[in-house]
Amino acid sequence: MSVLIKGGRVITAADDYVGDVYIEDETVSLIGESLDVEADKVIDASGKYVLPGCVDPHTHLDMPFGGTTTIDDVESGQTAAAFGGTTCHVDFIIQPQGSSFADAFDDWRSKANGKQVIDMGYHMAVTDLREGGSLEELASLPDQGITSYKLFMAYKGALMVDDETLFKTMEVAAETGALVMVHAENGDAIDVLVKKALAEGKTEPKYHALTRPPETEGEATNRAIQLARVAGCALYVVHVSCHEAVEPIALAREKGWNVFGETCTQYFFVDYTFLERPNFEGAKYVYTPPPRDKANQELLWAAVRNDVLSAISTDHCAFLWDGQKTLGKDDFSKIPNGGPGLENRLHMIHEFGVRDGRIGLNRMVELLATNPAKLFGLYPKKGTIAVGSDADVVVFDPTRKHTITAASQHSKTDYNLYEGTEVTGTPETVLLRGNVLVEGGELVAEPGIGQFVKRARFGEQLTAVEAAA
Ligand code: URP
Ligand code: ZN
Ligand code: ZN
Image 1: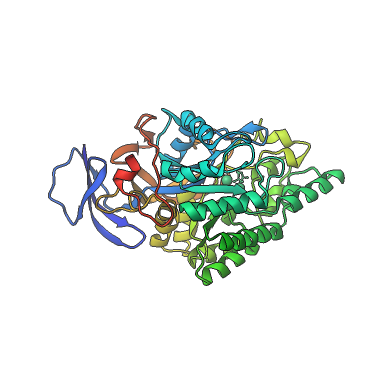
Image 2 (image 1 turned 30 degrees about the vertical axis):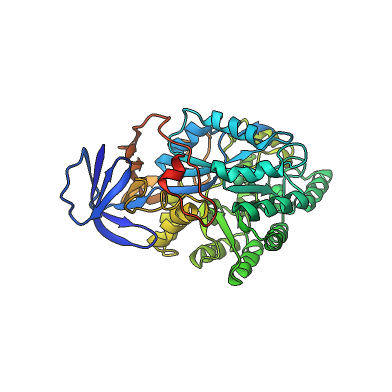
């Protein structure tokens, strides 16, 4: 099957030109002006942007969490992703305490089997090095294409690890070339604050934020950076939400350390006041770290513009408001933590980042596709449009208006963080390895088309042979 995408404005992290993209056997085989080639399918992209498929480095599909399981499984979550122009993501395997990493990997692979709409890789969330996985087993994961280890420094009594586990994992990563990811919050201090709030009868959703002050994120971010420095590993701080966490990352990067940070779409748009919405509406915005004071929003835009933060993810971790978030009706600490977002990252960043003049188109591509692909060992197979790359392509209409609503989304959840937001610019046609996924507002491919991708180690490039091995 060959596809010719004709006359679009091709935008990568580095380039911006009008040209034709020719796809054969799932990869880009030719790029040029007015290519004289025959193709099985021709897509007229004049007046459209031709973007690399976006890569989301932080999602949670089919994950047991907070006394329930996320409402989006691999099929619904990846369908939402495809409609939003994301063609590859990296999800988290959560090691159940007492379980080996191999068992956890098998379990997550079997949950995805036959359901995949886009390509995916996995990070391994380490929860237990005493009874469950061993250091040797952890060290073997990069050979299987799992080249990042995630540690939760919060969620005491559930996923949180102590500094010993964090540091030992960092030492393994320094040996194996894996990237260490941290959810950076001081879980012990937060646990004290949560218990105190509940004892004082403070049960509403807003106390989720009031018991997780930004300093607890700043402290843990700095601790993780300093420990990574001692261990000698590369570090990626997930879902950075506030000034207190941006500052130590900026400092580390100024020193030239291998420290990276991401923020998520929601932190630019949802602030603390959303948690105060009446009638338990505030529970929709209970995710961690919590929505912060509005002053942090422009600060985060500056951080992504200036390369203090390297990527924008969604942290898609969707629950129903009616039926799952309500588990915490009388106790904010029982509201499952997480929010949806896989479908709207490109919409929102294009509208309020590019169209509002905060970042350029090249930087948008870098933040949503190229940098996540580079940091997580998917580049240059993913994250760019170049000869030899996977033909993961978004034909994006920058003039078409779209209103974001829960009623029209593809996630199974019953609300949208950006409900009613009107954007100008939306994906029109989405291709995965040259196969059309989305066209004319429909999903035209069958689940099962997506593949597991074995990722390269941090700083190494992924070749087609390695990815398929
Ligand atoms: O509230 C969130 N972010 N839920 C997902 C798990 C995590 O901490 O990333
Ligand atoms: Zn987290
Ligand atoms: Zn997360």
